[in-house]
Length: 275
Image (cartoon, rainbow, N blue to C red; front, side):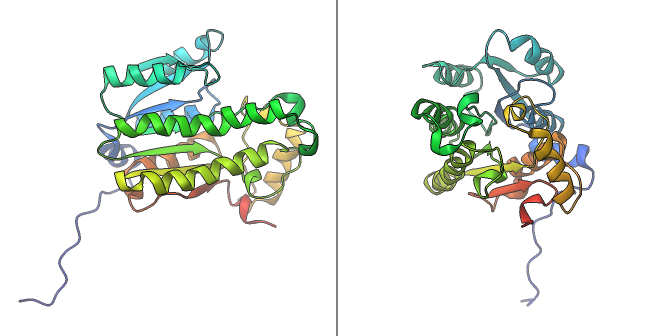
């Protein structure tokens, strides 16, 4: 018998992004939550996942937001477009009931929502109200836990859960204020969910983009200063864009990341490594 090692399974050719990575995601179905407009991180994720072959369900916050999201859903040929305000009891459950009826299973879910009342976000943590802190935690963190709970029975063959974090969860970032501990709780939740769901081959990640000019980020005080500092300090001397975030998400959903879970993946041109 030969002593030569057995050949490895053939690897997909990933250098042709549109043709080859698309093969990896073809047939996968997933939910993307948090699209507000074409500049949203969630839209960058949805667009790349769709371009690489996945079928996408989108949500919109309310009737006021729907005219901005509906054309994007049409552009992506989204199978489902559903209302979702996580502060409204029963709306998350209604989304998953519809997914169960239409698809019966789910391969991935992308959570890209966060909120804090402006008065609490712009003030010191030591001064923040209990109500504001609890609301920020419910929308930005617990809604991801609730989503994971509802995804679990739909991911009998495994799946991927991804949420969006920020460097302010790990280091003090001026003006990020109350969202720092909220995102820290989110990142910790990712690790515990990865542990609890790993036996079912459900992988869980936080993706941490650098600062981006999104509608949600506009609520942070002195945001232009934060942007300028990120460009000046990052090794790449630039900002990332939503397409770059989307490509990383597509990698995590695809088979290339099958040996990974529980990680915080930075997509910030190296900003997080700088002192």
